[in-house]
Amino acid sequence: MARQRPTAACGCGTRWRSLEHKAVALDVLKAVTPNLAGWKRYLLRVSAMNVMVVRFLFIFLRNTRIYAHTDGVKTGLRFWLRFLWVVFVAPGFWRRSLPSSLAITCQISIRRTATMPVVRKGRAWLEREMPSASGAVPSGPAG
Image: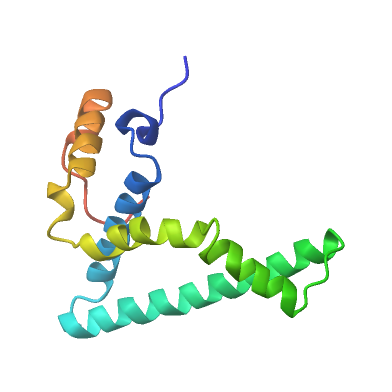
């Protein structure tokens, strides 16, 4: 019998995964930069996120152009205006996903993560399914 994935058990899908990834990333950043002031660590984190968002956007738009060319679609000004209309206005895929993305990004902090219902559900599931994993995580080098 196949083991059920945590995202299916807690019923929260990608939100749970994004919470866990964010928590791990922030823990790693804090561990690697212990002597850095809090505001400098924050600027480093925000700068890294901005660089990656811009890079992902360029890659996405480049791939969109490549896929359109492969399908025989001309990617002139009319194509890009129509593309912006579709993703932002009607039906507005990016516009509709923006509120939930901002909610995940802006409302979750290191202090509040442990009290969020999604995190509590996931931790309860982990304790039920994997009792040995609920103990303390050893600190130190892996291997």
